[in-house]
Length: 253
Ligand code: A2H
Image (cartoon, rainbow, N blue to C red):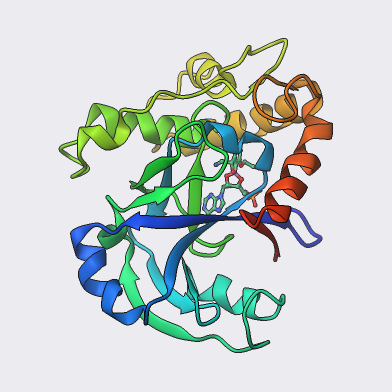
C-alpha cells in the first residue's frame, strides 16, 4: 500500500439496462437521472480491453445524486471522498438516493468507455475490498491477473455463480505487449504461477506485482489512439483523453 495519496482514474460506466433486481431497487429512485457505475483504476491505458465490470457480493452500494442529471453507483465511502474533491454539485454533501446489495447489481448491462466491447455486464467478484477505490472494479482480463482469474472462474462455473454464460462470452483483448509475457500478460502469469482460482490470493498478489511492473516499464501499446507508444507515455495520455471526453475523472484517496 502506497503512503501518499493514490491517484485513481474514475471510469464512468453508464447503465444501459439494469438487472431485474437492480431495476426494482433503483429505477424509481433516480428522479430521471442517468445512472453510472464508477470504477477506480490505476491502469487507464488498459481500458480498451474491458470485458465486464466487477462488484463485490458482500458489499453494499449506494446510488448517489451527483447533480440533477446524473447518479453514481459506488460505496458510501467513495461518494463521501468525491464530495470533497469537487465531483459532486455541492461540496461536502453526500446525497444518497438509495442503497443496494452488490448481488442485486449483477447482470446489469453498462457501457465500457474505450473498450472494443461497447457494452459489458456487471459480474460478481469475491475479493473486492469495500475499503479501496469505489468498490467497483472494471475488468481487463488481458492485463490484470485478478480479473483474468475471476473471469475464468465465472466461465467455468456460471451456474454456481448464478450468471448467464452470455455475460462471460467476450474474449480478452490484447492491449499491450511486453517482451517477456507477450500480449496476454495476465494469462501468461496465471499459468506460470499455477494459479487455479480467485481464492489463490497469495499467488495472485505476486502475479499482480509482476504484471504491473512489466506492463509499466516494458510494455508497448498494441491498440488505440496511442498504439506503438511505451505504456509509460500512453498511461497519462489515455487518462487525459478520457477526462477531456467526459468518460472519466480524477479520483484520489
Ligand atoms: B486496476 P491498489 Cl489491467 N478491491 O484496474 C479490489 N481491487 C480493486 C478495488 C477494490 N475495491 N478497486 C480497484 N481495484 C483494482 C485495471 C487493472 C488494475 C489492471 C491491472 C492491474 C490493476 C483493471 N482492473 O491493479 O491496491 C483495480 O484494478 C493492480 C494494481 O490501489 C485498480 O487498478 O494498488 C487496482 O486494483 C487498485 O489497486
